[in-house]
Image 1: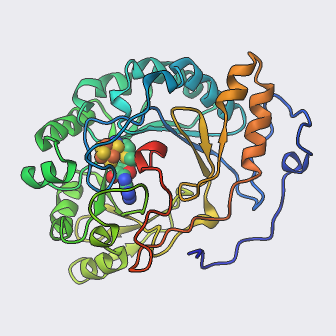
Image 2 (image 1 turned 90 degrees about the horizontal axis):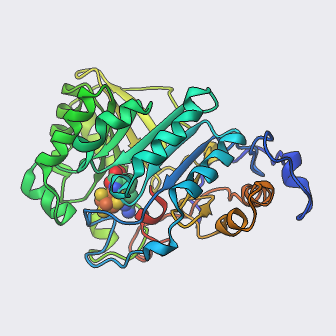
Image 3 (image 1 turned 90 degrees about the vertical axis):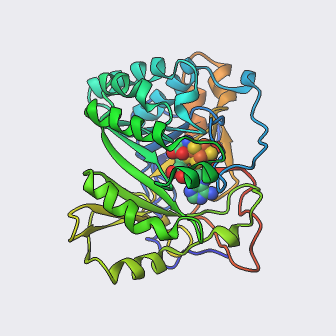
Length: 360
Ligand code: SAM
Ligand code: SF4
């Protein structure tokens, strides 16, 4: 069942997508436009599937990670990202797994920052659990990173440890401080979990806004097998919003990132609050993003299984011609939207891979 509830504009297939398979494409320049007329300007890159935490909604306790030899090298990741930048991608987000556990990640960040310097990229950013931010914040800022998203699901150290199965809240808070000292703007991401942190949403909001940080709440998505059932974790955000509205004045903002978040200004705190509601209300019609895994698979939608292998064309030739053709073919297959649903009849994952593979 699709959760798409609004009609999409009529297909306006780009000239590139209409070319028969095998036709040579320009090596760079042509914008990436999907069959629904959506411009792909945002690439999220999962640089590793590994992580130093095991959040209960994201991973199972015992995960099998990819053998290291399967990973693209940092140079290959750079080449792939740069190919997307050449095709009009303006924003790159490094994610994972935990991006900061990837060895020498700063080399990749430094190298990608050349696109910022020459103005072909607007933003190079990161989503992190914050455990290693204290160590890397200054370097990230030095390479032109301006903002980071940090995931924090509880401000109670014990509860934080339970949710992450091993995390140290204080280490993360030190990381956030270091990031802010380095001049990075920090946004906090919190997955709303039924019966786990729903009583903390107000304190989280007051803390984040009190510190001048935006907060985004996320509905848990049915990705990958995990030990507790999804139905047990799923807390619909419209319900959370209703509860917040009893206490705060929430003023809708028109700001859009092309992503699934919708924002309100909280009058009492002055801060911004985002809601990512893939389950109760998706916004696939304005989706501007695709996701690359650390093995070179390109997912055109977080909630669908179809993926394109970019590693083979990348490795088969030093020129980017085959790679560009593979990217065009992939974008021409970007689906209309995802099919996430969690209810009593749908407790199995919508997709078998965990969020850590495609990076959220
Ligand atoms: N390790 C980093 C972190 O935790 O921020 C980056 C990767 S993590 C997969 C990216 C985001 O996805 C985090 O904000 C995390 O809370 C969220 N996430 C992970 N699994 C999720 C799920 N099943 N449903 C909703 N959000 C999820
Ligand atoms: Fe690791 Fe992030 Fe997944 Fe938590 S949400 S297990 S920190 S990848």
